[in-house]
Length: 186
Image (cartoon, rainbow, N blue to C red):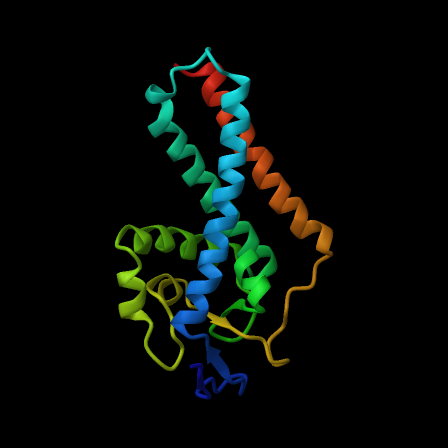
């Protein structure tokens, strides 16, 4: 169920906070897509380094590399396009409290708090997602709202190819990061 807030006096826009269930599906799409990309990059590099690397020694360091790239993915996707893949598929956008597109900084803050909320199995997010805006803790700190655009909010219009450059770039940056980890660090 979606809630609305008409209290935005400066712009008289209606804020629609997307329900926790809808946001869960967008998050799940993101997690699956990131898992597939991270797994593909990791498997490709394992095949490149079979017999050259003791994977058990580097496993924890790889997680830090992937964590960094996950932060970068969410920051760039939401900061430049107002949505991650899951949000785009479900037609959602991240906007600030005035209805303007999400900034890079706000997207970064959201990514940091997404990690913290995930450590606690999303319980922190669910506790904070109260009507009418349904903001998780990261949204509250970043002063953002996830909305279903209804023509009142500007949607960041960039060429589609730039979105795919970020997605493909994410894959290659993960590969490069893992490559340098395997090839040059002890």
